[in-house]
Length: 395
Ligand code: UT7
Image (tube, rainbow, N blue to C red):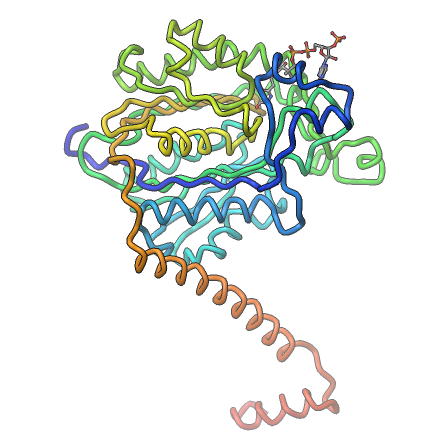
């Protein structure tokens, strides 16, 4: 691969809501205990959205802004924005389009990607292929979720597991052997019903019945997902390591999907790797689905656990059922020097201008629709329109 065009992560960022929900607080609303949650999952707390102003798009935008600052990149340099999420802002438009607008990424295409908790690695794989093939110089990949908005707070089987957050990575072209070396993607749709949001799609549209039966909440067969995960995480790790031409012993750090410490311990055992080669932060965030791996990557870098030349494996599994892994040779020196204040200030100004631009475009659209909408000839708008038409020679 030497001398070839590669794709590497040059910027990273994360965002979580301020509100922390502890196990003790959950034990007041459902029949559970801190002891059960910690011993069966490893989770101690999770961050949850607490205001209407927080959503998947706002968390994604915050994480993306940090990633762009780290990459020292203007939003207009992005060619594509991909948001991996199971909790999009709407069915349509894509959350990625809203993030693209909020960032002022005026030259970027945008789409959402649905692959459950595996979504971020799927998106990273697509981004790296697009960058390597010359389709774009810079692609922004985001995993963002507000799972607590689709959580049934009376179901102790699921409500203790999930949290909200977002993680972002800028994938940029580079020369030489660095960046994403290999990815493996997998799916087994026969397990689709094991982890599902039953209602609200074209199969079972939202109705009074679906709402009263809780069809708009996550339904999961935890044991089945657990069994699947303990088999697929080591398999996918081995497959991607082989595809990258590495030995397992060369891997510096595995960043797994943060669902359950017992799944990670089991994978470490099956692979014959020490547990300290696995980055774990699920005790503080719970399972944030597509956001879990980019958040973990971000924290691993910020905690000094990722250095240039390191060989990383990202590995995930989730609804679909899906799984994926990425082998990355880290190419960017860490820690990244903080931007000097004028650049920081300029970057913030750019983001503020993007907000203004978005508002102006919305107002412009409203004014146009108002002015060009149906009017009666005898009201003042109709008379004004006739005058303008005469003035332009159309009347
Ligand atoms: O991102 C992918 C998304 N999902 C996952 O990764 C989930 C994977 N699965 C898991 O992590 C685990 O299966 C769980 C944490 C969900 C459950 O742990 P488990 O050891 O598989 O428990 P279980 O489902 O076998 O349930 C054992 C018992 C049951 O009681 P009975 O039937 O034995 O009397 C449950 O009702 O634990 C009970 N239980 C609870 N007890 C207290 C289930 N949830 C709770 C709870 N608090 N929150």
